[in-house]
Length: 92
Ligand SMILES: [Zn+2]
Image (cartoon, rainbow, N blue to C red; front, side, top):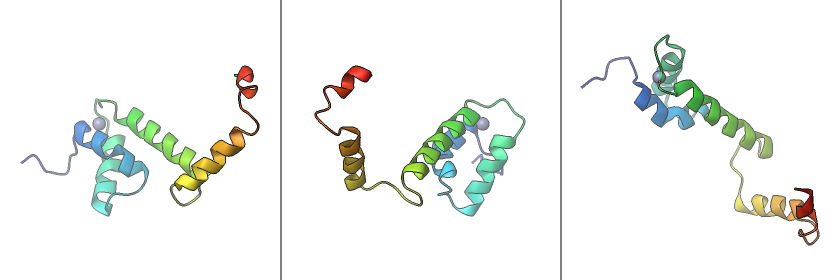
């Protein structure tokens, strides 16, 4: 087993989304934080984290403190699509 304190890039990439969501247990959160600040050649770890954080921020803006229930998405879509929708499409 290679399970010392050092996380591999592959392992980090698997956990990046959960890490950004603060959904890992404390040890894993710390291991991820340590890994991404490590001065080694990473295989896309920081980019993956930036993307994951971007998604998290976006969700947080829509729904502070939780994930969006389907009903909310429908409501958002209904607002965006007020009117017939076909005339709005010309703006895009
Ligand atoms: Zn890495």
